[in-house]
Image (tube, rainbow, N blue to C red; front, side):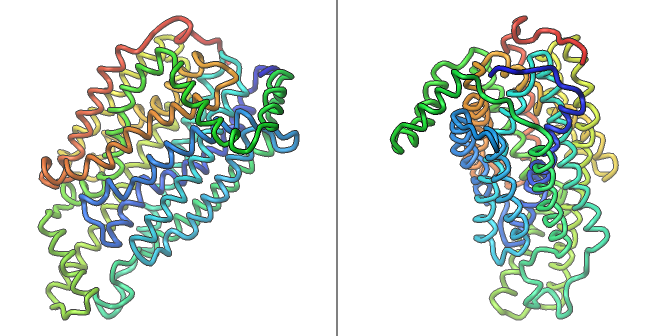
Amino acid sequence: MAGKIRLSFWQILNMNVGFLGIQFSFGLQQTAVNPIFSFLGAHHEDLPLLNLAGPVTGLLVQPIIGAISDKTWSPRWGRRKPFFLFGAILGSLCLFAFPFSPGLWFAVGLLWILDAANNTAMEPYRAFVGDKLIDSQLTFGYQMQSLFVGAGIVLANASLFLFQDWFSEPVVEGGLCAEAAVTTIPAWVYYSFFLGAITSVTTILWSVFKTPEIPPSNKELLEINKSKEQPFTSRLLDPIKEIIRAIGGMPKLMKQLSLVYFFQWYALFIYWQFIAPMLKTSLLGISNEDILKSESIMDSCKAGETVSQLDMSFAQNIQSLSEQALSQAALMNGTYNFVTMIVALLMVPIAAKYGNKKIYVVSLFFAAIAMLSMPFIHDKWLLLAPMVLLGIGWAAMMGIPYAMVSRVIPEEKRGVYMGIVNMMIVIPMLIQTISFGPIIKNILNNNAVNAILFGGVFFAIAAVLATQLQSAKTIDKKEADL
């Protein structure tokens, strides 16, 4: 792609603002969706499989959309922007609808659509940054994305934490078995989803109107026009063929990174699914037996059976503590993403001095320490300490690998290769959704605390494997000052 020039700080910032809205949506998914599933009657062992939407849509949507966007150009709308604008609009509609879910099946279905929309927006956005920036600004550009990743998730979690404090209400009159109280989503959760829907669209529009795309070169335009002349079936199959060819020719760094990513993203998916359930046990003292008893009482309510006042009070208390666990998880997730905002850009000169690989390895070890320590901390404010380490890890994970990969992939195939990087993320997640339900039920005693410790071990393995990543001057070179 010809015509690249050095961009100013504000140009790079404007280009990445849309990531704030996309990540607000992801922040709600990370923190609120699994508790919503629990409010609607899901059990611990159900949670991994109920999250199948994320890895499946990521596996199918991102690389295909990336390959298609490589072959797209509109003088009016550009190459990448139509995709992340459409994804943002569809995702916003899902966010508006999500808290109105009448049952678990409806919420799970919406999650599939929401994930597809977010993935449609995500991959072209990654390629968009690479399209615009010269090599010496790539780390800064992707770390700026990390900053907005953190900002979006901070806002999502701050809204959940504050809205629970401001708008949480006692169980409706008539007790737990009142029709409106059985398996309902708390009203304060609605407001966070509405705010996320508005944020998603407005921030994407900001980047769309503030950042022009670079027109393709004559050679690229010839390839695009040639692709348009092909029969529909060929155009439909070409992205899949392109993905297969690209996988076969992956640079050595990407092959090594895929193994690191397996353990890293498996661990992260465990964290997002089980942080709120862990807090119920480690912080609030709710045992598995308490949860099962509460669920039994709720099932009796749904069946129209008579429930004693004592049982009703017990289940109401578990419901209240579950909301507190969601609020605490939001505070913790907001904290680590706030740390990400602070350290994301600070990592640019540090990575230039010590190398991307070393910073990545240390950050993964920090994430491992965070997950291995948090189950043993029983004060809600002290629990924010490991979030500092996790925030540093998250800042590195969301920026540095993309900067490393961006230097070793062909310019004209940036979209498809960024899609393949996402496949390296979602395949471990897909394996986790299928495998971890039986693991936690049969090996980890159906205990969310053990799940978090399991994830910490996987982070440590990822860090060890990252020490073996290719480290050549062509990949990990020092960058000029902005």
